[in-house]
Length: 429
Image (cartoon, rainbow, N blue to C red; front, side):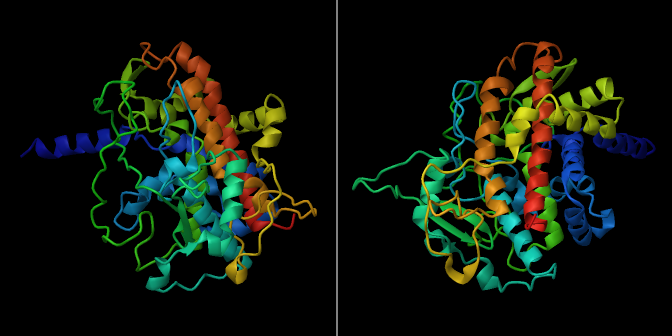
């Protein structure tokens, strides 16, 4: 028995020292939050401080909260909200399509819209805590035909080239798609999407690289989830508080800018073993934390604060031309006219562009387009992530080629997060 306690202590220490394969890792999430905090207005900072008084509104300090709670009983169902598997074929073909890759709304894209809507209502209600919705209402969706106009949403998605126009046997373009939106967020009902659990350590590949990721075996429902509970929706006994919604939103905007959170190949790189600086890990972990941690340690004085200032300077100089477009959504090709949503509430999806009569968009409509963000970030899976990942130790040419991509993606996430928070909490500016 004398050896038991030292062995247990050693195991605990090793567990604490082993990094986990969470999106961007703590450094990436914190950096994105730091960039955003430097870009938001004092009005927005004051609103953030009301919601997160324990950290005086500093979202960089809560950026990893959503990863920390997703294994707890209350938030176990939120694990699939951190990613959205594109059913494409990197590095040969990359094309994130929302209706195909998030068919039941149980993904990071729909979750960003859901948590944004919660915070918009909170701001419009004068920062008063919302009354808990009845259990029956928490699981009752409204069709987008009622909420914002099916024709308008359909045209918006097609115009943004997020999903190709489809036709059924009679020539209409409904194509068996049923969209509903409620307190649980956006649901696209066509087929059930696959779910994946991400291990914290590399696991052997379940199939050879290049295997078809489009035919996954559907895993069982998350243990403890009632059979009639909509995927991704909160348990009936509680709803999200504004603080929870904000923490989730901050984290998930960061997640969607990590390209492997939009890849279905080899479980988002978790089943793709790689060698980096002599250490065995998986490709997901390499992009989550390993490259960024090495850069901070070797090139940026071990300081997140210093790297944040470097990234902000790059945004102003090196990336200035493209950075001006990061927080702008593309406009639809055709004007969209539709009656106001039922009940008078504005859907986050509503309003894709100015009409021919000159109707202006709300700030939120101009900058919140996570489907468009995902389409762009997914291109990195073809151009960068999966190119040469099996070529020996990746701490050389692969690292030098892709570190700038990691840094730019972190900065892009911070810029878009700041713009989104401004649109929510400072909509009149």
